[in-house]
Image 1 (cartoon, one colour):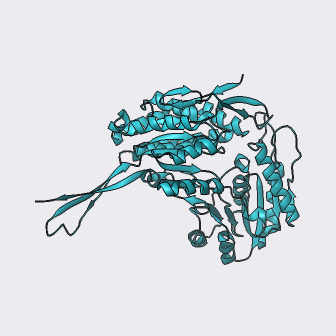
Image 2 (cartoon, one colour):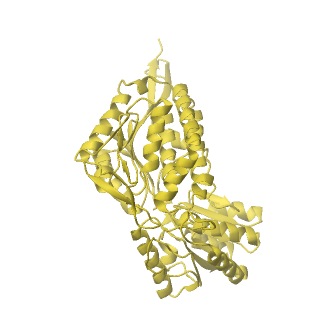
Image 3 (cartoon, rainbow, N blue to C red):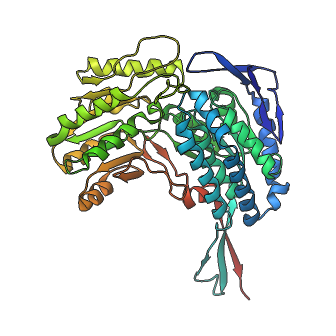
Length: 483
């Protein structure tokens, strides 16, 4: 049966103000499995008003950090209870293997909520000694206040996990929120909002408006009562958000993807590096912001490594993720399938050597073959542009210095991995890389206590850890004249 999803505003499900709906299509068989409310500017205004009310004298504004922490822990327990349901929601929406969100996304979401619960009572101010005021002594101190209503705009690739990155931290800081999930994946955000109500959050603290970015996202960015936009998505959309938010002096946090290098030195544990690079390329069909799709391999092992990686790609079983033994489902939508195929053809046309996979034929479902290129240069499109699909590009290097230069020769700067058993080399290379996070002998390690974010085109700001919570506060200075 087709589901009919509605907004969640001020503790209640509701249709769009004009009754309009949008279709949700399975990437496995291209059949409609749900419809969702197609949000309007009026829907956003209603949600922002509810969120703003809770900050200005509502029940939420009366809670202290410890009380907010208790609610966050309760929410984490409810997410744990509904782990299988939430994992299946996200997996089916983008054609992902249900195992992946069970192992990674939902556990990370739970950890985000528990970690933020701990931060809620730790967002402390400080006492600052000064020279006084006109010869008299003063006491100067700071306090942390919630930044206000947050517009959280979430992508389709890991919906629940990324929603909780934003939601957990902003709730710990005392903010309220209007969440705009991707039009492809609204289910888990709507269920999470309902769990917030079940946990005891006051109505209006957490709201979800479904719809298209050009309407709902833009309305959030333009609304005068939205103090901050937290966005994860493409650089193009991030630039558009900055153009709107800049003249309004809104705070923004932008996580805009990457072209993350995995640097494999010849002293690395060969099998571990092959396994790690395989995961970094193919997990979630390669639809990961930190996908390690640019594989820099030392020349002394390059041919052997390329053969092993191609063999691993060929061994991946592609199909309906509900069927036994299937390891990779389709990409999330037709436009993504077309995009990945276009890049694969570009790689062939530019002279890279195709070792596995290739352009996928059209048919029912948005399936793409796991693909590996070798003999590439760092100037090719497949090495410079974010493909967001299961495509890995191998580039050879000689020296540590060349590896660092290749890794940094990118407009992106989100993450990187260094594969080596030389501890000194690991520290030296990691510190030289122009990225927000480096994994040594592990691809993209996520932890709720660590900040996450990028440099250059990969974005602005950090989510996660204490940094993520503080980013949703404003620091106020208070100076008291002492008689």
